[in-house]
Length: 211
Image (cartoon, rainbow, N blue to C red):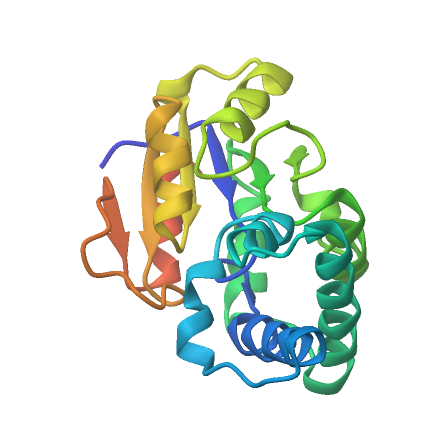
Protein backbone atom coordinates (compact mmCIF):
# COMPACT_ATOMS: atom_id res chain seq x y z
CA UNK A 1 0.00 0.00 0.00
CA UNK A 2 1.21 3.50 -0.79
CA UNK A 3 2.48 5.56 2.13
CA UNK A 4 2.29 9.34 2.51
CA UNK A 5 4.36 12.03 4.18
CA UNK A 6 1.32 14.14 5.05
CA UNK A 7 -1.95 12.90 6.51
CA UNK A 8 -4.60 15.62 6.54
CA UNK A 9 -7.92 15.32 8.37
CA UNK A 10 -11.34 16.91 8.27
CA UNK A 11 -12.73 17.36 11.80
CA UNK A 12 -16.51 16.93 11.99
CA UNK A 13 -17.52 13.38 11.10
CA UNK A 14 -13.90 12.32 10.73
CA UNK A 15 -12.22 12.99 14.07
CA UNK A 16 -15.15 14.29 16.12
CA UNK A 17 -18.56 12.64 16.35
CA UNK A 18 -20.63 15.80 15.87
CA UNK A 19 -23.49 14.69 13.61
CA UNK A 20 -26.15 14.82 16.31
CA UNK A 21 -25.05 18.22 17.61
CA UNK A 22 -24.79 19.63 14.10
CA UNK A 23 -28.30 18.62 13.07
CA UNK A 24 -29.99 19.40 16.39
CA UNK A 25 -28.44 22.86 16.65
CA UNK A 26 -29.31 23.71 13.05
CA UNK A 27 -32.90 22.58 13.53
CA UNK A 28 -33.17 24.71 16.68
CA UNK A 29 -31.71 27.71 14.89
CA UNK A 30 -34.15 27.38 12.02
CA UNK A 31 -37.03 26.99 14.44
CA UNK A 32 -36.03 30.30 16.03
CA UNK A 33 -35.59 32.03 12.69
CA UNK A 34 -38.58 30.59 10.86
CA UNK A 35 -40.89 29.68 13.71
CA UNK A 36 -41.31 26.14 12.38
CA UNK A 37 -39.61 22.79 12.76
CA UNK A 38 -37.71 21.13 9.91
CA UNK A 39 -37.17 17.35 9.75
CA UNK A 40 -33.56 16.56 10.61
CA UNK A 41 -32.97 14.41 7.48
CA UNK A 42 -33.76 17.45 5.32
CA UNK A 43 -30.74 19.21 6.82
CA UNK A 44 -28.14 16.62 5.89
CA UNK A 45 -26.98 18.71 2.93
CA UNK A 46 -25.22 21.01 5.42
CA UNK A 47 -22.53 18.50 6.40
CA UNK A 48 -19.05 19.35 5.20
CA UNK A 49 -19.64 22.94 4.06
CA UNK A 50 -19.08 26.20 5.98
CA UNK A 51 -21.99 27.26 8.17
CA UNK A 52 -22.32 30.59 6.41
CA UNK A 53 -22.71 28.77 3.10
CA UNK A 54 -25.47 26.63 4.64
CA UNK A 55 -27.44 29.74 5.50
CA UNK A 56 -26.90 31.12 2.02
CA UNK A 57 -28.29 27.91 0.53
CA UNK A 58 -31.30 28.24 2.83
CA UNK A 59 -31.91 31.65 1.21
CA UNK A 60 -31.60 33.86 4.27
CA UNK A 61 -31.37 37.52 3.19
CA UNK A 62 -28.87 38.10 5.99
CA UNK A 63 -26.95 34.82 6.01
CA UNK A 64 -24.36 36.12 8.47
CA UNK A 65 -26.97 37.01 11.09
CA UNK A 66 -28.67 33.64 10.62
CA UNK A 67 -25.34 31.88 10.97
CA UNK A 68 -24.67 33.69 14.25
CA UNK A 69 -27.94 32.28 15.60
CA UNK A 70 -26.78 28.80 14.61
CA UNK A 71 -23.40 29.33 16.31
CA UNK A 72 -25.17 30.13 19.59
CA UNK A 73 -27.38 27.05 19.29
CA UNK A 74 -24.37 24.90 18.41
CA UNK A 75 -22.54 26.09 21.51
CA UNK A 76 -25.57 25.35 23.69
CA UNK A 77 -26.03 21.88 22.17
CA UNK A 78 -22.33 21.13 22.62
CA UNK A 79 -22.62 21.80 26.33
CA UNK A 80 -25.79 19.73 26.60
CA UNK A 81 -24.76 16.76 24.51
CA UNK A 82 -20.97 16.89 24.63
CA UNK A 83 -18.58 16.57 21.69
CA UNK A 84 -16.41 13.49 21.68
CA UNK A 85 -13.73 12.02 19.49
CA UNK A 86 -14.80 8.83 17.77
CA UNK A 87 -13.91 5.86 19.95
CA UNK A 88 -10.29 4.92 19.36
CA UNK A 89 -9.34 8.09 17.48
CA UNK A 90 -7.22 9.57 20.26
CA UNK A 91 -5.16 6.38 20.31
CA UNK A 92 -4.70 6.53 16.53
CA UNK A 93 -3.48 10.13 16.73
CA UNK A 94 -1.06 9.20 19.51
CA UNK A 95 0.36 6.38 17.40
CA UNK A 96 0.75 8.69 14.43
CA UNK A 97 2.94 10.96 16.55
CA UNK A 98 5.57 8.21 16.46
CA UNK A 99 5.65 7.91 12.67
CA UNK A 100 7.37 9.93 9.95
CA UNK A 101 4.14 11.57 8.81
CA UNK A 102 3.20 15.22 9.30
CA UNK A 103 -0.41 15.68 10.38
CA UNK A 104 -2.69 18.47 9.20
CA UNK A 105 -6.25 19.75 9.43
CA UNK A 106 -8.59 21.13 6.78
CA UNK A 107 -11.96 22.08 8.20
CA UNK A 108 -15.09 24.06 7.40
CA UNK A 109 -15.00 25.42 10.93
CA UNK A 110 -13.89 29.01 11.36
CA UNK A 111 -10.61 29.67 13.15
CA UNK A 112 -12.54 30.59 16.31
CA UNK A 113 -14.62 27.42 16.15
CA UNK A 114 -11.49 25.36 15.61
CA UNK A 115 -9.89 26.85 18.70
CA UNK A 116 -13.02 26.41 20.82
CA UNK A 117 -14.13 22.95 19.70
CA UNK A 118 -10.84 21.24 18.95
CA UNK A 119 -7.74 22.83 20.43
CA UNK A 120 -9.23 22.83 23.92
CA UNK A 121 -9.12 19.05 23.84
CA UNK A 122 -5.36 19.22 23.87
CA UNK A 123 -5.08 17.91 20.31
CA UNK A 124 -3.84 21.02 18.55
CA UNK A 125 -0.23 20.05 19.16
CA UNK A 126 -0.68 16.91 17.08
CA UNK A 127 -1.05 18.92 13.89
CA UNK A 128 1.62 20.99 12.17
CA UNK A 129 -0.83 22.94 10.00
CA UNK A 130 -4.55 23.74 10.28
CA UNK A 131 -6.47 25.43 7.46
CA UNK A 132 -9.90 26.71 8.51
CA UNK A 133 -12.81 28.38 6.75
CA UNK A 134 -11.33 31.71 7.87
CA UNK A 135 -8.15 31.15 5.88
CA UNK A 136 -9.35 30.96 2.26
CA UNK A 137 -11.91 32.93 0.20
CA UNK A 138 -13.62 29.69 -0.81
CA UNK A 139 -14.05 26.59 1.32
CA UNK A 140 -14.75 22.99 0.47
CA UNK A 141 -15.73 21.61 -2.06
CA UNK A 142 -13.40 24.05 -3.85
CA UNK A 143 -9.71 23.10 -3.82
CA UNK A 144 -8.64 26.33 -2.13
CA UNK A 145 -8.20 24.91 1.41
CA UNK A 146 -6.02 22.05 0.19
CA UNK A 147 -4.02 24.37 -2.06
CA UNK A 148 -3.46 26.60 0.96
CA UNK A 149 -2.24 23.59 2.94
CA UNK A 150 0.20 22.69 0.15
CA UNK A 151 1.42 26.29 0.03
CA UNK A 152 1.94 26.56 3.77
CA UNK A 153 3.72 23.24 4.18
CA UNK A 154 5.55 23.02 0.85
CA UNK A 155 4.16 19.50 0.41
CA UNK A 156 3.89 17.88 -3.00
CA UNK A 157 0.33 16.78 -3.83
CA UNK A 158 1.43 13.17 -4.35
CA UNK A 159 2.76 13.08 -0.76
CA UNK A 160 -0.60 14.04 0.80
CA UNK A 161 -3.63 11.93 1.76
CA UNK A 162 -6.83 13.64 2.93
CA UNK A 163 -9.33 11.88 5.21
CA UNK A 164 -12.94 13.10 5.22
CA UNK A 165 -16.54 11.97 5.57
CA UNK A 166 -18.34 13.90 2.83
CA UNK A 167 -18.40 14.43 -0.91
CA UNK A 168 -17.21 18.00 -0.26
CA UNK A 169 -14.02 16.65 1.32
CA UNK A 170 -13.37 14.30 -1.56
CA UNK A 171 -14.02 16.99 -4.18
CA UNK A 172 -11.69 19.43 -2.43
CA UNK A 173 -8.80 16.96 -2.44
CA UNK A 174 -9.44 15.68 -5.95
CA UNK A 175 -9.50 19.15 -7.48
CA UNK A 176 -6.17 19.91 -5.79
CA UNK A 177 -4.61 16.72 -7.15
CA UNK A 178 -4.44 15.03 -3.75
CA UNK A 179 -5.42 11.44 -2.88
CA UNK A 180 -8.47 11.11 -0.65
CA UNK A 181 -9.97 8.56 1.73
CA UNK A 182 -13.65 8.43 2.71
CA UNK A 183 -14.08 7.43 6.37
CA UNK A 184 -17.19 5.33 6.69
CA UNK A 185 -17.41 5.56 10.50
CA UNK A 186 -18.57 9.16 10.14
CA UNK A 187 -20.06 9.36 6.65
CA UNK A 188 -23.85 9.61 6.77
CA UNK A 189 -24.43 9.24 3.02
CA UNK A 190 -21.43 7.37 1.53
CA UNK A 191 -23.29 5.91 -1.44
CA UNK A 192 -22.06 7.27 -4.73
CA UNK A 193 -19.13 9.23 -3.28
CA UNK A 194 -15.97 8.65 -5.30
CA UNK A 195 -12.77 8.19 -3.31
CA UNK A 196 -9.35 6.65 -3.75
CA UNK A 197 -9.87 4.71 -0.52
CA UNK A 198 -12.90 3.81 1.59
CA UNK A 199 -12.07 3.04 5.22
CA UNK A 200 -14.31 1.08 7.56
CA UNK A 201 -11.84 0.79 10.45
CA UNK A 202 -9.75 3.73 11.71
CA UNK A 203 -6.83 1.39 12.34
CA UNK A 204 -6.45 1.39 8.55
CA UNK A 205 -5.10 4.95 8.81
CA UNK A 206 -1.85 3.57 10.19
CA UNK A 207 -1.21 1.59 7.00
CA UNK A 208 -0.59 4.80 5.08
CA UNK A 209 2.50 5.90 7.01
CA UNK A 210 6.02 4.66 7.61
CA UNK A 211 6.77 3.88 11.24
